[in-house]
Length: 444
Image 1: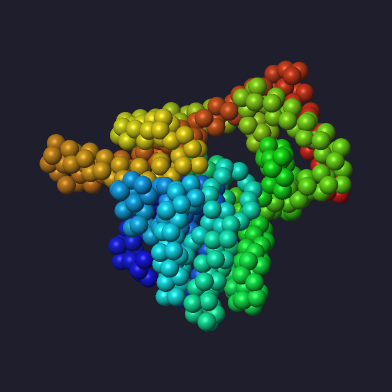
Image 2 (image 1 turned 135 degrees about the vertical axis):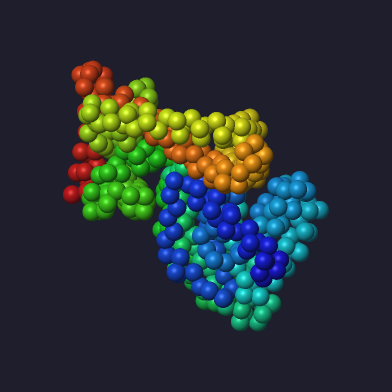
Protein backbone atom coordinates (compact mmCIF):
# COMPACT_ATOMS: atom_id res chain seq x y z
CA UNK A 1 0.00 0.00 0.00
CA UNK A 2 1.29 3.45 -0.88
CA UNK A 3 1.95 5.88 1.94
CA UNK A 4 -0.43 8.38 0.32
CA UNK A 5 -3.06 7.90 -2.39
CA UNK A 6 -4.31 10.86 -4.43
CA UNK A 7 -7.25 8.85 -5.75
CA UNK A 8 -8.29 8.01 -2.20
CA UNK A 9 -7.90 11.63 -1.14
CA UNK A 10 -10.07 12.86 -4.04
CA UNK A 11 -12.83 10.35 -3.24
CA UNK A 12 -12.68 10.90 0.53
CA UNK A 13 -14.68 14.20 0.65
CA UNK A 14 -17.59 12.49 -1.15
CA UNK A 15 -17.52 9.53 1.24
CA UNK A 16 -17.22 11.83 4.27
CA UNK A 17 -20.15 13.93 3.03
CA UNK A 18 -22.34 10.84 2.59
CA UNK A 19 -21.12 9.53 5.96
CA UNK A 20 -22.31 12.69 7.72
CA UNK A 21 -25.66 12.54 5.91
CA UNK A 22 -26.03 8.88 6.87
CA UNK A 23 -26.06 9.59 10.60
CA UNK A 24 -28.25 11.88 12.65
CA UNK A 25 -25.19 13.10 14.53
CA UNK A 26 -21.48 12.27 14.54
CA UNK A 27 -19.47 13.20 17.62
CA UNK A 28 -15.68 12.99 17.46
CA UNK A 29 -13.86 13.12 20.79
CA UNK A 30 -10.17 13.76 21.47
CA UNK A 31 -9.02 13.74 17.84
CA UNK A 32 -6.17 16.03 18.90
CA UNK A 33 -4.66 13.08 20.79
CA UNK A 34 -3.80 11.29 17.54
CA UNK A 35 -0.05 11.65 16.77
CA UNK A 36 0.79 13.12 13.37
CA UNK A 37 3.58 12.08 10.98
CA UNK A 38 4.46 9.02 13.06
CA UNK A 39 3.81 5.29 12.63
CA UNK A 40 0.42 4.78 14.25
CA UNK A 41 -1.87 1.78 14.76
CA UNK A 42 -5.51 2.51 15.55
CA UNK A 43 -7.09 -0.16 17.78
CA UNK A 44 -10.91 0.20 17.75
CA UNK A 45 -13.66 -2.02 19.11
CA UNK A 46 -15.66 -3.78 16.38
CA UNK A 47 -19.46 -3.90 16.19
CA UNK A 48 -20.56 -2.82 12.77
CA UNK A 49 -18.58 -4.25 9.82
CA UNK A 50 -17.42 -1.63 7.27
CA UNK A 51 -19.05 1.23 9.20
CA UNK A 52 -16.44 0.85 11.94
CA UNK A 53 -13.66 1.38 9.39
CA UNK A 54 -15.48 4.42 7.97
CA UNK A 55 -15.91 5.81 11.49
CA UNK A 56 -12.12 6.16 11.65
CA UNK A 57 -11.24 7.00 8.04
CA UNK A 58 -13.97 9.68 7.85
CA UNK A 59 -13.04 11.40 11.11
CA UNK A 60 -9.24 11.54 10.98
CA UNK A 61 -6.99 13.27 8.43
CA UNK A 62 -4.85 10.19 7.80
CA UNK A 63 -5.24 7.43 5.23
CA UNK A 64 -5.13 4.36 7.49
CA UNK A 65 -4.66 0.92 6.00
CA UNK A 66 -7.17 -1.59 7.36
CA UNK A 67 -7.05 -5.35 7.71
CA UNK A 68 -10.27 -7.32 7.12
CA UNK A 69 -11.25 -10.97 6.85
CA UNK A 70 -10.32 -12.49 3.52
CA UNK A 71 -13.71 -13.96 2.55
CA UNK A 72 -15.12 -10.52 1.67
CA UNK A 73 -12.44 -10.26 -1.05
CA UNK A 74 -13.71 -13.28 -3.03
CA UNK A 75 -15.73 -11.16 -5.44
CA UNK A 76 -13.24 -9.46 -7.86
CA UNK A 77 -15.24 -6.23 -7.95
CA UNK A 78 -15.46 -6.11 -4.15
CA UNK A 79 -11.73 -6.86 -3.93
CA UNK A 80 -10.88 -3.88 -6.16
CA UNK A 81 -13.10 -1.54 -4.19
CA UNK A 82 -11.65 -2.74 -0.89
CA UNK A 83 -8.08 -2.37 -2.14
CA UNK A 84 -8.85 1.15 -3.32
CA UNK A 85 -10.21 1.87 0.16
CA UNK A 86 -6.85 0.68 1.56
CA UNK A 87 -8.22 -2.52 3.03
CA UNK A 88 -6.10 -5.70 2.89
CA UNK A 89 -7.23 -9.29 3.53
CA UNK A 90 -6.24 -11.40 6.51
CA UNK A 91 -6.58 -15.16 6.09
CA UNK A 92 -7.96 -17.43 8.79
CA UNK A 93 -7.90 -21.21 9.22
CA UNK A 94 -11.45 -21.38 7.86
CA UNK A 95 -10.10 -19.95 4.57
CA UNK A 96 -7.94 -23.06 4.20
CA UNK A 97 -4.48 -23.93 5.46
CA UNK A 98 -2.95 -23.06 2.07
CA UNK A 99 -4.36 -19.53 2.29
CA UNK A 100 -2.68 -18.84 5.65
CA UNK A 101 0.69 -18.41 3.92
CA UNK A 102 -0.78 -15.31 2.27
CA UNK A 103 -0.65 -13.57 5.66
CA UNK A 104 3.16 -13.35 5.40
CA UNK A 105 2.82 -10.96 2.45
CA UNK A 106 0.05 -8.99 4.21
CA UNK A 107 2.12 -8.63 7.38
CA UNK A 108 5.12 -7.48 5.32
CA UNK A 109 2.97 -4.84 3.63
CA UNK A 110 1.63 -3.77 7.03
CA UNK A 111 5.14 -3.40 8.40
CA UNK A 112 6.13 -1.36 5.34
CA UNK A 113 3.23 1.03 6.00
CA UNK A 114 4.52 1.64 9.53
CA UNK A 115 8.13 1.91 8.39
CA UNK A 116 7.08 4.68 6.00
CA UNK A 117 5.45 6.61 8.84
CA UNK A 118 1.94 5.62 7.78
CA UNK A 119 -1.03 4.46 9.82
CA UNK A 120 -2.78 1.12 10.23
CA UNK A 121 -6.19 0.38 11.70
CA UNK A 122 -6.59 -3.15 13.04
CA UNK A 123 -9.63 -4.43 14.90
CA UNK A 124 -8.09 -6.34 17.81
CA UNK A 125 -11.26 -8.39 18.36
CA UNK A 126 -10.75 -9.69 14.78
CA UNK A 127 -14.48 -9.90 13.92
CA UNK A 128 -17.58 -7.86 14.64
CA UNK A 129 -20.40 -8.65 17.05
CA UNK A 130 -23.69 -6.87 17.66
CA UNK A 131 -23.42 -6.20 21.36
CA UNK A 132 -21.68 -3.68 23.60
CA UNK A 133 -18.92 -5.84 25.03
CA UNK A 134 -15.18 -5.91 24.46
CA UNK A 135 -14.30 -9.48 23.66
CA UNK A 136 -10.93 -11.16 24.23
CA UNK A 137 -8.45 -9.50 21.88
CA UNK A 138 -6.36 -11.38 19.34
CA UNK A 139 -2.61 -11.01 18.86
CA UNK A 140 -2.77 -9.35 15.44
CA UNK A 141 -1.64 -5.89 16.54
CA UNK A 142 1.16 -7.10 18.86
CA UNK A 143 2.47 -9.48 16.21
CA UNK A 144 2.65 -6.81 13.48
CA UNK A 145 4.06 -3.97 15.59
CA UNK A 146 6.69 -6.12 17.32
CA UNK A 147 7.84 -7.60 14.01
CA UNK A 148 8.03 -4.09 12.56
CA UNK A 149 10.03 -2.88 15.56
CA UNK A 150 12.30 -5.95 15.44
CA UNK A 151 12.95 -5.36 11.73
CA UNK A 152 14.07 -1.82 12.62
CA UNK A 153 16.21 -2.63 15.67
CA UNK A 154 13.35 -1.52 17.95
CA UNK A 155 13.83 2.11 16.92
CA UNK A 156 10.65 2.56 14.84
CA UNK A 157 8.65 4.21 17.63
CA UNK A 158 5.22 2.78 16.80
CA UNK A 159 2.33 4.26 18.77
CA UNK A 160 -1.05 2.66 19.38
CA UNK A 161 -4.22 4.74 19.53
CA UNK A 162 -7.15 2.98 21.25
CA UNK A 163 -10.52 3.96 19.79
CA UNK A 164 -14.03 3.53 21.16
CA UNK A 165 -16.85 3.40 18.60
CA UNK A 166 -20.44 3.79 19.78
CA UNK A 167 -23.72 3.60 17.84
CA UNK A 168 -27.10 4.47 19.32
CA UNK A 169 -28.61 2.00 16.83
CA UNK A 170 -25.97 0.43 14.60
CA UNK A 171 -28.13 -1.23 11.86
CA UNK A 172 -30.04 1.95 10.95
CA UNK A 173 -29.51 5.26 9.22
CA UNK A 174 -30.00 8.48 11.20
CA UNK A 175 -28.63 7.00 14.41
CA UNK A 176 -25.90 8.63 16.51
CA UNK A 177 -22.22 7.76 16.10
CA UNK A 178 -19.53 8.61 18.64
CA UNK A 179 -15.86 8.09 17.78
CA UNK A 180 -13.82 8.36 20.95
CA UNK A 181 -10.06 8.56 20.38
CA UNK A 182 -7.97 7.57 23.38
CA UNK A 183 -4.51 8.61 24.53
CA UNK A 184 -1.80 7.21 22.25
CA UNK A 185 0.80 5.02 23.96
CA UNK A 186 4.15 3.71 22.80
CA UNK A 187 5.03 0.09 22.12
CA UNK A 188 8.63 0.70 23.30
CA UNK A 189 8.03 -0.09 27.02
CA UNK A 190 7.03 -3.63 26.00
CA UNK A 191 10.05 -4.24 23.77
CA UNK A 192 12.29 -5.80 26.43
CA UNK A 193 9.53 -8.17 27.53
CA UNK A 194 9.08 -9.20 23.90
CA UNK A 195 12.82 -9.77 23.46
CA UNK A 196 12.90 -12.05 26.51
CA UNK A 197 9.78 -14.00 25.55
CA UNK A 198 7.79 -13.27 22.39
CA UNK A 199 4.53 -14.72 23.70
CA UNK A 200 4.64 -12.90 27.05
CA UNK A 201 5.49 -9.63 25.32
CA UNK A 202 2.56 -9.95 22.92
CA UNK A 203 0.16 -10.91 25.71
CA UNK A 204 1.27 -7.93 27.81
CA UNK A 205 0.72 -5.51 24.92
CA UNK A 206 -2.60 -7.15 24.03
CA UNK A 207 -3.82 -6.73 27.62
CA UNK A 208 -2.70 -3.10 27.67
CA UNK A 209 -4.67 -2.41 24.49
CA UNK A 210 -7.80 -3.92 26.06
CA UNK A 211 -7.37 -1.80 29.21
CA UNK A 212 -7.01 1.35 27.08
CA UNK A 213 -10.08 0.63 24.93
CA UNK A 214 -12.46 -0.30 27.75
CA UNK A 215 -12.87 3.23 29.25
CA UNK A 216 -13.73 4.58 25.77
CA UNK A 217 -16.76 2.33 25.17
CA UNK A 218 -19.89 0.98 26.78
CA UNK A 219 -18.74 -2.43 27.92
CA UNK A 220 -21.29 -4.89 29.31
CA UNK A 221 -19.35 -6.51 32.16
CA UNK A 222 -21.28 -9.79 32.15
CA UNK A 223 -22.71 -11.12 28.89
CA UNK A 224 -24.93 -13.56 30.78
CA UNK A 225 -26.99 -10.52 31.77
CA UNK A 226 -26.51 -8.55 28.53
CA UNK A 227 -30.24 -7.90 28.00
CA UNK A 228 -30.63 -6.50 31.49
CA UNK A 229 -27.65 -4.15 31.14
CA UNK A 230 -29.07 -2.89 27.82
CA UNK A 231 -32.41 -2.25 29.51
CA UNK A 232 -30.74 -0.28 32.32
CA UNK A 233 -29.21 2.05 29.69
CA UNK A 234 -32.71 3.01 28.60
CA UNK A 235 -34.37 3.02 31.99
CA UNK A 236 -31.83 4.98 34.03
CA UNK A 237 -30.29 7.38 31.49
CA UNK A 238 -32.02 10.50 32.85
CA UNK A 239 -31.33 9.44 36.45
CA UNK A 240 -27.59 9.14 35.87
CA UNK A 241 -27.38 12.29 33.74
CA UNK A 242 -28.96 14.19 36.62
CA UNK A 243 -26.79 12.40 39.20
CA UNK A 244 -23.62 13.36 37.29
CA UNK A 245 -24.96 16.87 36.65
CA UNK A 246 -24.71 16.41 32.87
CA UNK A 247 -26.85 17.88 30.13
CA UNK A 248 -28.92 15.34 28.17
CA UNK A 249 -26.95 14.85 24.95
CA UNK A 250 -25.30 11.92 23.17
CA UNK A 251 -21.79 12.58 24.49
CA UNK A 252 -22.97 12.79 28.09
CA UNK A 253 -25.23 9.76 27.71
CA UNK A 254 -22.10 7.73 26.95
CA UNK A 255 -20.65 8.82 30.31
CA UNK A 256 -23.95 8.20 32.08
CA UNK A 257 -24.24 4.69 30.62
CA UNK A 258 -20.71 3.83 31.74
CA UNK A 259 -21.52 5.02 35.27
CA UNK A 260 -24.81 3.11 35.20
CA UNK A 261 -23.05 -0.14 34.32
CA UNK A 262 -20.55 0.44 37.13
CA UNK A 263 -23.35 0.85 39.69
CA UNK A 264 -25.30 -2.18 38.42
CA UNK A 265 -22.15 -4.29 38.49
CA UNK A 266 -21.46 -3.27 42.11
CA UNK A 267 -25.00 -4.32 43.05
CA UNK A 268 -24.42 -7.65 41.29
CA UNK A 269 -21.18 -8.25 43.21
CA UNK A 270 -22.28 -7.01 46.65
CA UNK A 271 -26.02 -7.74 46.61
CA UNK A 272 -26.63 -10.66 44.22
CA UNK A 273 -30.18 -11.28 45.48
CA UNK A 274 -31.12 -7.62 44.95
CA UNK A 275 -29.57 -7.79 41.47
CA UNK A 276 -31.73 -10.79 40.48
CA UNK A 277 -34.89 -9.11 41.81
CA UNK A 278 -34.12 -5.90 39.91
CA UNK A 279 -33.38 -7.88 36.76
CA UNK A 280 -36.69 -9.79 36.87
CA UNK A 281 -38.67 -6.67 37.73
CA UNK A 282 -37.03 -4.75 34.88
CA UNK A 283 -37.72 -7.58 32.46
CA UNK A 284 -41.40 -7.50 33.43
CA UNK A 285 -41.52 -3.74 33.00
CA UNK A 286 -40.09 -3.85 29.48
CA UNK A 287 -42.43 -6.66 28.50
CA UNK A 288 -45.32 -4.49 29.71
CA UNK A 289 -44.35 -1.40 27.71
CA UNK A 290 -43.75 -3.63 24.69
CA UNK A 291 -47.36 -4.81 24.97
CA UNK A 292 -48.38 -1.14 24.67
CA UNK A 293 -45.93 -0.69 21.76
CA UNK A 294 -44.14 2.13 23.58
CA UNK A 295 -40.49 3.11 24.11
CA UNK A 296 -39.14 3.74 27.62
CA UNK A 297 -37.78 7.17 26.61
CA UNK A 298 -41.37 8.46 26.39
CA UNK A 299 -41.78 8.10 30.15
CA UNK A 300 -38.95 10.54 30.91
CA UNK A 301 -41.09 13.54 29.89
CA UNK A 302 -44.55 14.83 30.60
CA UNK A 303 -47.08 13.99 27.84
CA UNK A 304 -47.54 16.74 25.27
CA UNK A 305 -50.68 18.83 25.44
CA UNK A 306 -53.48 18.75 22.89
CA UNK A 307 -52.38 22.16 21.57
CA UNK A 308 -48.81 20.91 21.03
CA UNK A 309 -50.07 17.93 19.03
CA UNK A 310 -52.30 20.17 16.93
CA UNK A 311 -49.33 22.41 16.08
CA UNK A 312 -47.14 19.40 15.19
CA UNK A 313 -49.77 17.91 12.88
CA UNK A 314 -50.42 21.30 11.26
CA UNK A 315 -46.69 21.58 10.49
CA UNK A 316 -46.68 18.02 9.14
CA UNK A 317 -49.65 18.88 6.95
CA UNK A 318 -47.98 22.04 5.64
CA UNK A 319 -44.82 20.07 4.85
CA UNK A 320 -46.78 17.31 3.07
CA UNK A 321 -46.08 18.57 -0.51
CA UNK A 322 -42.32 18.59 0.11
CA UNK A 323 -42.58 15.21 1.83
CA UNK A 324 -44.50 13.76 -1.11
CA UNK A 325 -42.06 15.22 -3.65
CA UNK A 326 -39.08 13.75 -1.77
CA UNK A 327 -40.85 10.40 -1.49
CA UNK A 328 -41.62 10.18 -5.22
CA UNK A 329 -38.22 11.41 -6.41
CA UNK A 330 -36.28 9.02 -4.15
CA UNK A 331 -38.65 6.05 -4.09
CA UNK A 332 -36.91 3.73 -6.57
CA UNK A 333 -33.32 3.77 -5.19
CA UNK A 334 -34.53 3.76 -1.58
CA UNK A 335 -36.92 0.83 -2.16
CA UNK A 336 -34.35 -1.16 -4.12
CA UNK A 337 -31.71 -0.77 -1.37
CA UNK A 338 -34.21 -1.47 1.41
CA UNK A 339 -35.54 -4.67 -0.18
CA UNK A 340 -32.11 -5.89 -1.24
CA UNK A 341 -30.69 -5.49 2.27
CA UNK A 342 -33.69 -7.06 4.02
CA UNK A 343 -33.86 -10.03 1.63
CA UNK A 344 -30.19 -10.69 0.94
CA UNK A 345 -28.20 -9.56 3.98
CA UNK A 346 -28.92 -11.89 6.88
CA UNK A 347 -26.09 -10.66 9.12
CA UNK A 348 -27.57 -7.56 10.81
CA UNK A 349 -24.08 -6.11 11.41
CA UNK A 350 -23.55 -5.91 7.64
CA UNK A 351 -26.83 -4.17 6.82
CA UNK A 352 -25.83 -0.58 7.46
CA UNK A 353 -22.61 -1.17 5.49
CA UNK A 354 -24.56 -2.33 2.44
CA UNK A 355 -27.07 0.52 2.79
CA UNK A 356 -24.17 2.98 2.92
CA UNK A 357 -22.22 1.57 -0.05
CA UNK A 358 -25.27 0.99 -2.27
CA UNK A 359 -26.54 4.47 -1.47
CA UNK A 360 -23.16 5.99 -2.26
CA UNK A 361 -23.20 4.30 -5.68
CA UNK A 362 -26.88 4.34 -6.69
CA UNK A 363 -28.06 7.75 -5.51
CA UNK A 364 -25.58 9.82 -7.60
CA UNK A 365 -26.47 7.73 -10.67
CA UNK A 366 -30.17 8.26 -9.97
CA UNK A 367 -29.68 12.00 -9.49
CA UNK A 368 -27.89 12.39 -12.81
CA UNK A 369 -30.48 10.30 -14.66
CA UNK A 370 -33.43 12.30 -13.31
CA UNK A 371 -31.70 15.65 -13.76
CA UNK A 372 -30.72 14.64 -17.29
CA UNK A 373 -34.36 13.93 -18.08
CA UNK A 374 -35.34 17.28 -16.51
CA UNK A 375 -32.70 19.09 -18.58
CA UNK A 376 -33.91 17.44 -21.79
CA UNK A 377 -37.56 18.13 -20.97
CA UNK A 378 -37.19 21.77 -19.91
CA UNK A 379 -34.11 22.65 -21.97
CA UNK A 380 -33.02 25.07 -19.25
CA UNK A 381 -29.86 24.80 -17.14
CA UNK A 382 -31.58 26.51 -14.21
CA UNK A 383 -34.15 23.68 -13.98
CA UNK A 384 -31.33 21.15 -14.23
CA UNK A 385 -29.60 22.47 -11.11
CA UNK A 386 -32.91 23.05 -9.33
CA UNK A 387 -33.91 19.40 -9.79
CA UNK A 388 -30.37 18.18 -9.08
CA UNK A 389 -30.24 19.79 -5.63
CA UNK A 390 -33.92 19.30 -4.77
CA UNK A 391 -33.79 15.49 -5.04
CA UNK A 392 -31.28 14.80 -2.22
CA UNK A 393 -32.51 17.69 -0.07
CA UNK A 394 -36.16 16.64 -0.32
CA UNK A 395 -35.19 12.97 0.16
CA UNK A 396 -33.37 13.78 3.38
CA UNK A 397 -36.29 15.95 4.49
CA UNK A 398 -38.76 13.10 3.79
CA UNK A 399 -36.69 10.61 5.78
CA UNK A 400 -36.38 12.94 8.79
CA UNK A 401 -40.04 13.94 8.48
CA UNK A 402 -41.11 10.29 8.50
CA UNK A 403 -39.03 9.62 11.62
CA UNK A 404 -40.59 12.68 13.25
CA UNK A 405 -44.09 11.52 12.27
CA UNK A 406 -43.58 8.05 13.78
CA UNK A 407 -42.18 9.58 16.96
CA UNK A 408 -45.22 11.88 17.20
CA UNK A 409 -47.58 8.91 16.88
CA UNK A 410 -45.74 7.24 19.77
CA UNK A 411 -46.02 10.40 21.85
CA UNK A 412 -49.72 10.67 21.05
CA UNK A 413 -50.33 7.08 22.13
CA UNK A 414 -48.39 7.69 25.35
CA UNK A 415 -50.38 10.89 26.08
CA UNK A 416 -53.70 9.13 25.50
CA UNK A 417 -52.75 6.23 27.78
CA UNK A 418 -51.47 8.60 30.48
CA UNK A 419 -54.85 10.37 30.51
CA UNK A 420 -56.92 7.21 30.21
CA UNK A 421 -56.57 6.12 33.83
CA UNK A 422 -56.12 2.53 32.64
CA UNK A 423 -55.16 0.37 35.62
CA UNK A 424 -52.64 -1.73 33.69
CA UNK A 425 -50.87 1.36 32.37
CA UNK A 426 -50.79 3.05 35.77
CA UNK A 427 -49.20 -0.10 37.18
CA UNK A 428 -46.45 0.13 34.55
CA UNK A 429 -45.72 3.71 35.58
CA UNK A 430 -45.67 2.65 39.23
CA UNK A 431 -43.18 -0.16 38.57
CA UNK A 432 -40.93 2.23 36.65
CA UNK A 433 -40.92 4.69 39.55
CA UNK A 434 -40.07 1.89 41.97
CA UNK A 435 -37.15 0.71 39.84
CA UNK A 436 -35.73 4.22 39.56
CA UNK A 437 -36.22 4.82 43.29
CA UNK A 438 -34.35 1.62 44.18
CA UNK A 439 -31.33 2.56 42.06
CA UNK A 440 -31.45 6.13 43.35
CA UNK A 441 -31.01 4.82 46.89
CA UNK A 442 -27.77 3.07 45.88
CA UNK A 443 -26.39 6.43 44.67
CA UNK A 444 -26.77 8.10 48.04
